[in-house]
Image (cartoon, rainbow, N blue to C red):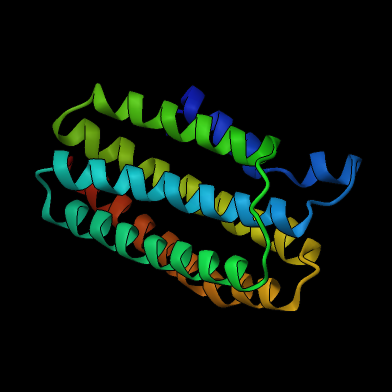
Length: 177
């Protein structure tokens, strides 16, 4: 799999463990911004894939990403509203957004099988990075019990997304799609 600048940016953003370890752990408002941004990046990519792909499995996966990540963002927004917490933009959330924008720009230049492979390859790497960040940084750093519980609750869905993306990736590779 090729590593694009967008992917590299995303990996660096989600590999925030080292950056946070050198300074303070992210605060709950910063975690909220990271979660919302990470989900929105995947929603935006999913919407593009739904419009551009001709492959039914890719379109179905993209719809699942839009639906599931919209649901996570709805839950996160409801929680931060209830807790009177304002998500706080930070270097990681900003880098995620930048990486997401770069990924969309790269995907918009592709068509057909090349688009499908690039989208799915990014989804595999992105979900693995999100899971790593959730496990190593976000859950351990969350101070609010409800925020931590939300992260723990959505983690299995991210794992299911990763496995689904890997299966789709293998199918595209096998079928030359």
